Image (cartoon, rainbow, N blue to C red):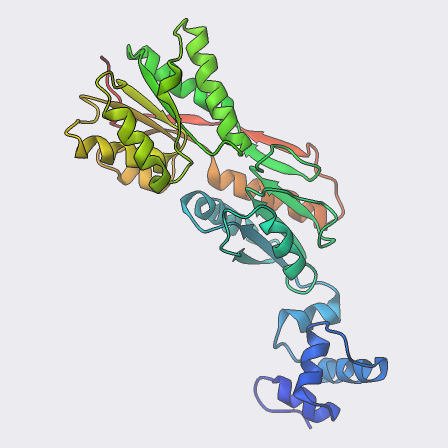
Length: 333
């Protein structure tokens, strides 16, 4: 008898003459169900049109038509990328799920997430700032965005961190600054290393020696940037300008400067990197290097859909340009 309204797992169990636990095992692909029972339950699922889970859908079609965006945590950078993916998914026929294990400081978080979701929940994944990506994990197409170690053996999308950092430093140099500090990102991230390299290259091209005591690790997080920023700005020979490796560090540097009685930009020029929405809302609005974050997300989605259609991304590494966004935190000496 066809149940009225939405079909529930209990309806499937009753029609198949098995327990709800057995139906759950079937739709979630767990062990402990005989082939005969599996066939019977699957027949009932098809007859009743049970749609209670993505797992049930994938068992019938071998596809969930869902693409996952896996992030270590939800913060301004990953949120802007997610907006780009969401805007681009449009008429692709795929749905989108964003997933975070909540362990930003654990190496290998993406492997656990892929094993958990691949096949039963998602058909493919965009993995944001992965520590390690093994193309064989999960057995589904994967595109990496801004991986820790740079381009991997999977298709990759990132921004031109080196050139962006060169432009940021050259801008400060053009304003007459020579005592420039660099509040760097995480040393284990290739993007952070590229930004520091760009800073050093620009200083070298200008013939300005880098004061190594002014190059300190900020860690890409506001809370980790506060102490080094305070140490830099409390020095009697403090820098006249700070190039922070991301906007959150730059904004916290401005807050520290204010707490020390320093005015931005009259006493200290500050420039960031990323152009997350918070940068425009800072007081004063932050001058920064803009990554095309939404475009990065959209590009990753387009590459992934092509892979699901059987194509091989060409090129396999997409490197997008950065741009300068001048606001109100930099001033000539």
